[in-house]
Image (tube, rainbow, N blue to C red):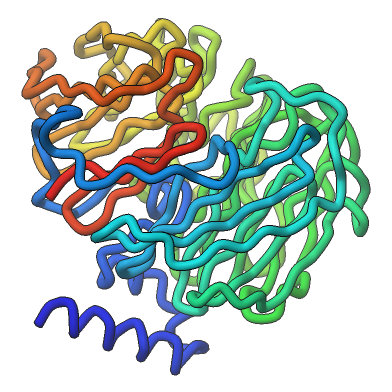
Length: 419
């Protein structure tokens, strides 16, 4: 009965596209994980996620991908979407769709890249931007500058070649910023050595709604969409600055500058405060929302004394902020004042951000180890430690949460964990 209801809802969504694309909560009703960090906050309301698993027990399915990629999968209804690239110069771009229950591949699209690169390593982005799923289909962006929209059956709806329109991307490590979904809109940040910009695109047509020029500044962070009613904002933490932009027109509302090394971790928010991560001490900080102009003297709530953040983005949950540093130490800070509550050394570092689910916090380490902790308390409560096999030269890059299971992404595989 539940499956029939979900499929009916999906059909209804496609039939009434204008209504459904304007409803950001629709993905939650379908138990979906529609973008980078789900809705951008790494929190799920799925209450039946697994606590324990191993290679021998708890892995639902494991499938090989057409190419290699560092993006996270996303889900919509019973479908899982993931991107990758292939070829010596990342000349092949792939979008693949799988069934969430069985792992069966439903369709695959292969596109040719507009721009080819001379050098390929795992520290130069390879299929790094995470796509966005929604009622009309799935949207994917690649470091070649190609932006595509497909419906849920794999038919192309529109495409754009941003490097042809706005210039090639310049920088030593490629593009890492993911697409961001907003009602009827897609948002994309391109910060690099060349002319940088924040782009807002219409989901249905692919046309530009607005484009805001930015100073050249290299980073790989993903913006955060904040639904604040008529004051909906896009928050960007990028190489020296934290800024808030108006979703309606792309105008900058507020800013904080002179931040160091906030180039990888993306911002997080609970709706009233924004927290950013940095790989430098005293640069992980929190600001109160509601300011205008330069907020340096008015809205900085706190700076963490020693916490740092590497690849993972901070998680805000039940009054605690979780940072993971380069060495793999999980640092829990008080959301109210930034004071450290406790720290715990994980088995390895993390590229994936921690995720909160009910009374648990999950930390997915690069080497396939996952530590599950209690979500409250003044000291770490270890509930379980789980392991799946990951090749020595590979790592867990990201995940999606849907249907009472995690879908983990390593370079060339998807692994579903949970019943």
